[in-house]
Length: 299
Image (cartoon, rainbow, N blue to C red):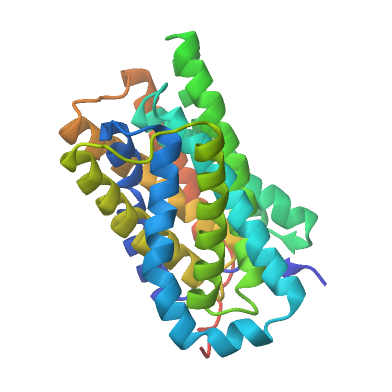
């Protein structure tokens, strides 16, 4: 029987809200950092891995040794999806605005729904309606950027690809979290992502050091706020909340990122894009409130 996506438990909604606040800092911090885009993508997961691996070795060594090979392989695949997600989204911020990139990468919610449906997940009709509204908002943002420049359109395309692989990452992570703890999964996933991005940086001759102190501070903030808090909390709630709902909750990072960029970077989205952000929020709220409340997890 197909699984029905239900409304998350209250504690998951609280954790999702904290995760959204942390993740909302990502796009503005990346846009403000002068380091190469792919190097930024590597360092955020590389530093996260350095923080998580010793803890995982102490707490989850037995769990990782006893984990089924299929679960471990899926965690490694999620890491590959995350590497591709960052490898397209982070460079997109060199071409298009924070607001547009944040909105388009959050199309991962739509892709997660598509991938989830292919894997047997069944969404309530109201959730599909919310997905359609959110997608309409994303399309309006893209249309606004098409009228600006080819450079902005290229950035939009990269951000949209980031959304595709972000959706795959969330869905894969949801499957893995049924068999692995948050600590074990994030250690495997982030370290796989970091190794792959490091390889890309070395092949592409990307500078991995020599940055200004302010840029290192931004990279550390990005690691702590967006990766260790934002992504890790999203991964934590995947055990009891559907991947599609987690992806849709991340759409709230769109207006928050735009507000941060406007204040810190004086980067204001075009007036025509503002109604689109309202559509994204409305669609997200509709999906998250669809379905019946799921029971709180025992773990």
